[in-house]
Each structure stands twice: as structure tokens, then as C-alpha cells.
Length: 169
Image (cartoon, rainbow, N blue to C red; front, top):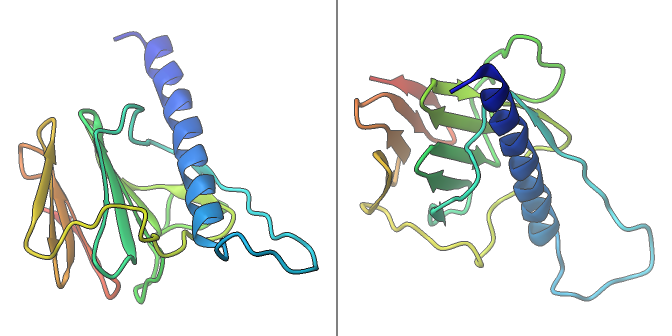
């Protein structure tokens, strides 16, 4: 794959993740369609760095709603709304880190997010019950009471929970 193709896919992926994050924020900040007088809140979210390519084949949230993931044959992107760990530094990032994790052919990384942190996933996102797994294109995510564990076919990936995260293996 040429460098130009890779850059094009990364740009396309970034746009799709931005759209997903904005829709997630808009959906989760809704109040059932009832509006009161006053300013309408707005959010701008943009992501720097590697992202999960388009064509998500599965989306889910853990039962708590704090963690939500999208999976495709090219990778996994998980968001976490509330964290109790110190967010890791991401080189060149002037936004938030620690709330968006990516696993793809390049390995595991945290994404740099501009704007507010993700919010808790709504009931409209399918729930991956504790003890259940989702698998798409060689990537597997397993839901547990202590968080989510996502890996590729080689066992590379991450474990993510409100209290902590760790790179796998």
C-alpha cells in the first residue's frame, strides 16, 4: 500500500471517528427531544492519530455504558467516559488523552481528542453483556465486570477499565 493511500485512509478514518464522536455526544446529551429556553450546547470533537477505518461491523457498550467500542476488520476503537487513572501522554497532543483507545494493524495506542471527553453510551447502543465476546476480522473484545479486553489475533491489545488500563500482552 502506498504512502498516499495510507494517508488517505487515515484522513477518512479520522473524519468517520469525528462523526461518530459528535453523534455520540449529541445523542447522549439529548433530553428525550424536549427543549427548554436557553442556549443549545455544542461540542466539537476531532481526533489525531491512528483510528479505526470505516465500515464498522460491530458496535457495543458494556452494561455500565461507561465504555463503548466499534469494531471492523481493520481495527477497534473504544471510548471511555469516566476514568480514575492518570491519562497517558501522547506525543504532539494538545487535547485530551486517555478516553479513546485504538487497536489496529499498527498496534495499540491512545488517540488525542480535541473537545469534551466522551459521555456514557446510551441505551440505543447494543450491550455486550459481561462474560460475552465480539469478534470481527481477527479482533476480539471481551466484556467483563472489570472492563473490556480487546486483542488482535496475536494477542496484542489492551485491557480498559475505569480504574486502570494496560497494554497486552
